Length: 81
Image 1 (cartoon, rainbow, N blue to C red):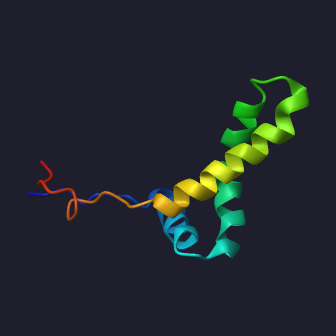
Image 2: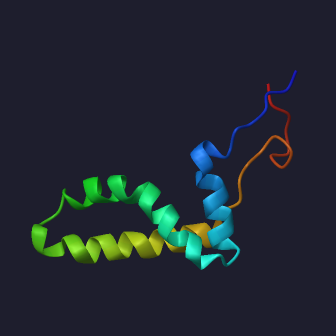
């Protein structure tokens, strides 16, 4: 029996796909989902760089969405066990 792959964890994959396909208005929703993690990462650096690092991470998130392709049991090339 094959397991169903849940690639759409809490809607994040759907947002990544939509942003990657050009729905730029959904980027704010996507960023809001990742903002707590981004803010946690930013705190590890000197306060004078917080805003720059936050902006860089936003850009990287946007670029990652452009290349996002979910892996499912259908397109992995092997069967789930």
